[in-house]
Image (cartoon, rainbow, N blue to C red):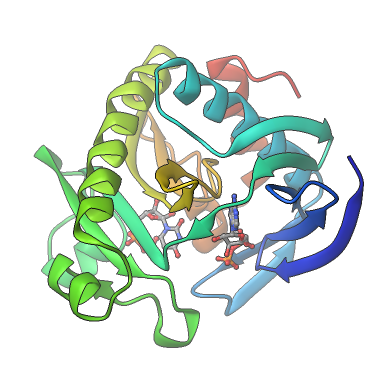
Amino acid sequence: MNKLEELFRGKAKSVYNTDEADRLILLFRDDTSAFDGKKIEQLDRKGMVNNKFNAFVMEKLEAAGIATHFDSLISDQESVVKRLEMFPIECVVRNITAGSICRRLGVEEGKDLNPPTFEFFLKNDDLGDPMINEYHIQSFGWAEAEHVEKMKQLTFEVNNVLKDLFLEGDMLLVDYKLEFGLYKGEVILGDEFTPDGCRLWDKETRKKLDKDRFRQGLGGVIEAYEEVGKRIGVEF
Ligand code: ADP
Ligand code: UDP
């Protein structure tokens, strides 16, 4: 397979066309951003760590029967994926309160949510990724009703698989964001699952091991990502 021109440069990854029409190459860069791109820094080794972390998690999800776009790792910072028609939507599940839900609802961080809660956000940095609901998705035509149902179902299935995976490494999966797309008419998981798009806390100390270390200037960001990876069996 040959890498062709850059199709899209996102905040943390670049997407390339390939000579296979239904395959893309994702390049995980060292760029790290927060606050809808307002805080950006380069973190040494981040692209490699996230690429390998993502490959490991996507393979676990596939093994559990969840269809993903992941095809193969082709270098330290690159993976081949299926080309999806992405929905402009972020699906978030929360097991414990943290981040925006605390600000929006005035609740304290660290409260268990039973059952876990679900939120949709519109992927639009200029608008600060506003929260939306299923009626908005229908009215504005961002996805069809059956695809919305499928995204919700898959996002909760991911929770069942990954809560246990991280618990085996003595970590709590606090919340996470997923993005989906259509491949040959089927809704499948796209984008990435890394500590950039989820919150993970040490089970005993509740130390933050995810991108909140970057958002909050706590330091040791990549060291934490690597620790999480090693605890679940990723080889860097
Ligand atoms: P952002 O768009 O938030 O800046 P990234 O830097 O991660 O994020 O950019 C990667 C882009 O690639 C995202 O817009 C994402 O929706 C898109 N993408 C991820 N996986 C696929 C895929 N399999 N097919 C097409 N686009 C994808
Ligand atoms: N998230 C993400 N990309 C976004 C917004 C959120 O990956 O554009 C992730 C975030 O890392 C967290 C979860 O989604 O794991 C919930 O994020 P929240 O709504 O709390 O927003 P935040 O306060 O993190 O901006």
